[in-house]
Amino acid sequence: MQRMSQSSFEQELGHTLEGVRRYHPLRVILFGSFARGDYHAASDVDLVIIKDTDRPFVERIGDVPALCNYAIPLEPLVYTPQEIEQMILRNNPFIEQVLREGKVIYES
Image (cartoon, rainbow, N blue to C red; front, side, top):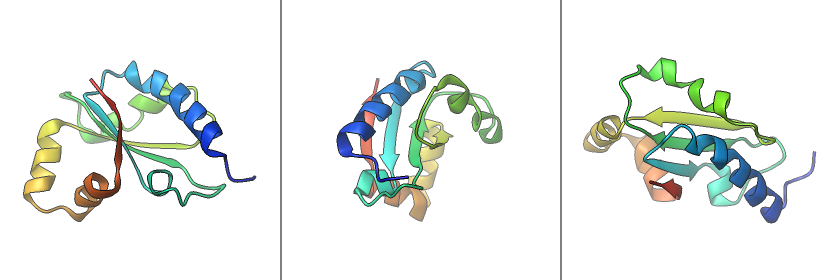
């Protein structure tokens, strides 16, 4: 498989976001290789999705893929605003990297 062009990626990401919006997130952050621009044919799209929810973390994992009809592999991680805040307060290196390198691609 060849590397996806920027315009093709943006088009596919737009289709994916249509499904993500049906999940009613507060914010969606693109991070990882697609955000940095160093993706390759086997790369997936890494998303942090911030949403108000009472569902446990492990139960949220399948929510977004079930709503999306996408041509690019998707790896969504769904956190509540409170979980993000706690990770920031604890200097969590993962969320620090997401916030530093990521790109907000949707905000309600």
